[in-house]
Image (cartoon, rainbow, N blue to C red; front, side, top):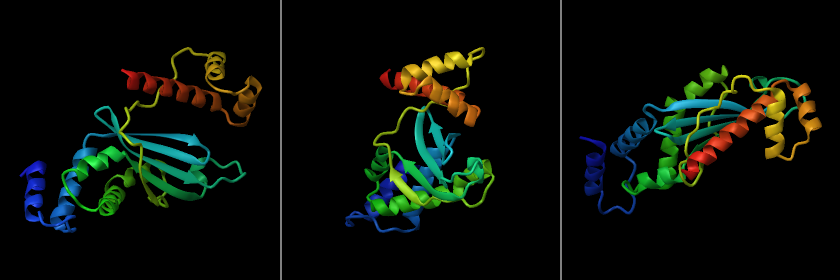
Length: 211
């Protein structure tokens, strides 16, 4: 029996319920839906700031999930990966949840609980492995963004590009001053390149969304 047939069967059995009561059959449908959603997906990650890491899961050109890990904002010089873990937010696009609830009338909070539970068991271990630490967990669930966005893998630096060329692009796209960027680069080597690659990726995302 495929997913649609399973959903129809559940609806027939629970037709008199305003919301289908949680049961093993419902849980199985939710789990199968999530397995299908993440099947074949790719995980990308980046250090956005010293206090946070962003993980994204993309499938068939769309971002299907995001996890943001927040770390202690201390004044020491430790890398992000060594700072105390503060919180982890799992974001799933709102329209992804809406589309499921069009077919299965479970309570929204219960569906979110099951998504978080399944994610922690099946996907979060990949994040834990990548970060090399075992204290990570999901502490908040968000329905964000409103609609699944186009997914763009992290951009690699074009061959031969100079720091001066990277500076020129950043200065055109931001309110940074040249001396500020050079100071940040001295304090944190690689800062200019990371900012430059972020601007390239944002430009590609904007292009794809317009197409």
